[in-house]
Structure formats: structure tokens, C-alpha cells
Length: 345
Ligand code: ADP
Ligand code: DP6
Image (cartoon, rainbow, N blue to C red; front, side, top):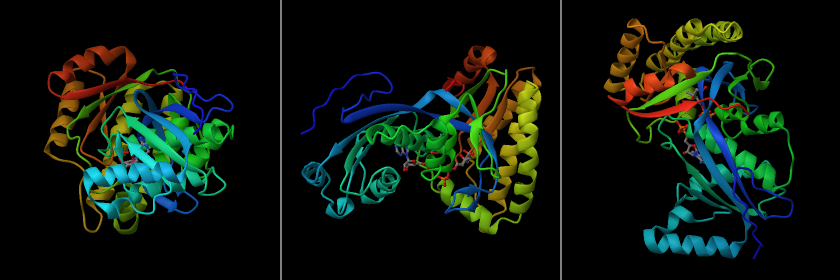
């Protein structure tokens, strides 16, 4: 077997070591990516801007393995689970939050690893943990996929730049590309560029965890349905272009009130494409509406806070770092929360 020098810390790889460990952060958009103009080339329908969050992250270990390692792991799983079919034909091992993933989920990640390896004879084991609920609309895909990309860069000795990694990452998951920059990152639909957006605002987020269950319609499927069928989709794309320009302006001017107001408007516009899809659907539940009202009421009482929602019922509250403690105190009386500053990358 390989000699393993396990060093601890964030980015562990040293030349010649066969196991790597990386950390990557989730991001939440304040101008949303929703729709693909060209899914093959990964050109989004809308430009987007997001905050990269210090306290919502994924830690991923990756190492080379051989056929025997896969056989042993799968046999162990089959013994405990007794479901042979789920784990057939796997060329890599993918453990997510301690659980061996089935062939379908593993293949998705194997395709991402293919972007780095010569061929599938270079097999890998990936062990990854999210510190936030997975697939619940809390952006685990952005930290998860960007972590896999970072780990591949180390394991396969590629030394790509952050920009190059971001460009590769978008093929794993569009939003993950923004996790290579922070505290604020943009993805431009016209130039394809992914880059840091400058602002002196010290932004932060409080996530109101209203439902930790796996969502029924993934972001990928949701945005595809909206792009194909929503009667509002063209309008969404047009207005998004304006939102993107304005948000960059407001960030440059350090105008938090305008940044917050536009964050809410843009999120509601994205969700309007969902309500107007055919068939219409929703990611919201009753608690989502209640939480939105709660945020609005706080604002009417002078607090500086604004909501945004992604492909799930959970509400994310945008605020300034200086108000984070006070606002977290208010929200935690009513909700389970995740509090996070942004991270400088
Ligand atoms: P979320 O809202 O959490 O981003 P998605 O449905 O968009 O939910 O994405 C969830 C998917 O992202 C998972 O099913 C898995 O394929 C991938 N994912 C989540 N966490 C990780 C991780 N740590 N490593 C690799 N892939 C991950
Ligand atoms: C609502 O990046 O998950 O979170 O590119 O198909 O993997 P794929 O989609 P994904 O979509 C994220 C959509 C969003 C908004 C955003 O993060 O900008």
C-alpha cells in the first residue's frame, strides 16, 4: 500500500504524499445563477454574485486506491446493507458524511475526477464531510464540489491557479465555481470570468435552518424546468442583467441598504420563475413565509437584515458583520441557526 504522511491542517499535500486533505467553503448568492444558456459549455443564463462563508464548509480527503480496496469496501457495504445492485461497477469509492455512496452518486463524482486524471485506472477514494446539512438548499454542492476539485489538483499534482480551478469546477456544479474566491465572488455569464468583487462592506449571513431534509427537486432539475417552461424566464434573465450591474455598483459604493434590498428582490424574482414553471412548483413552505415576514418586521424596527432563499425552504439572512452577534441573538430565540462571517480567500 501507499505510504501515508498525514500532516493535519487545511491543505495537506506535500510532494510525494499519496493522501491529501482540503477544506472548501460554501457560498450563498445575492444575485442568483438560475438557468443554463449552454449546459455543455456551462454558460449560465444569468451572471451571479455570492458571499463565501467561513463557517459553512466541507473537508475532503482523497487518496489513490486499487481494485482490491474497492472490492473490500463494497463487500462490507453489501453485507451490512444487503443490496448488491446499488454498488455495482464502481471505479472509485466515495464516502459522503461517513456513508459509502451508491454507483449513481459515485459516478457523478468520478466524472469530476476524470477532469484531472489520464484514465479510470487511476482510482481514488474520496472521504468528505459537510458541516451543514447536505442537499437541503444550504449549498453543500458548492463547498462539496469545490473541495473535490481542490483535492484533485493536489492529488494529481496539477498546480492550477484559483481561476483555472474555478473554471473546471463549474462543470461539477455551477455555483461551486464561485467558492474559489471570497469574501464576495462573481461569475459573469458574458465573459465567463469568475472573480472577486471588491467592497469595503463586511458582509455576513445567518442561515435559518427550517428544514434539513433532502429537497425533492435538485437545483439542476429545477432550473432546467424553469428555463424550459417558465413564462417569466426571459424577463428573469433580462432583469438579472440589470441586477448584476447594479449589485456590483452598490457593493463598490458600500451601500448596504441597496445591496440588501436588491438581494431580496433578486431572490424573489428567481422564485417567480419557479411559480410560473409548467407545472408550477415551490421550494418554500409555511415556515419560509413566516421567516421572511420575521426578517421584514425586524427591518421595520430598525434592524439591518435582508432575506434570500435558494432551491430549498431555508432562509438566509444577509447582514453586516458588526450586527452579527446582536441579530444572531434575536434569531436563535426562534430558529435553529448557522452564523457565518465571510472568508477572504
Ligand atoms: P445543496 O443545496 O446542498 O447544494 P444540491 O441538491 O444542489 O443541494 O446538491 C447536493 C449534491 O451535492 C449531493 O447530492 C452531492 O452530489 C453533492 N455534494 C454535497 N456535498 C458534497 C461533498 N462534500 N462532496 C462531493 N459532493 C457533494
Ligand atoms: C439556487 O450550482 O447547484 O443555489 O450547476 O446544475 O450544479 P448546477 O446547479 P447549482 O445551482 C445553484 C443555484 C442556486 C443559486 C446560486 O447559487 O447562484
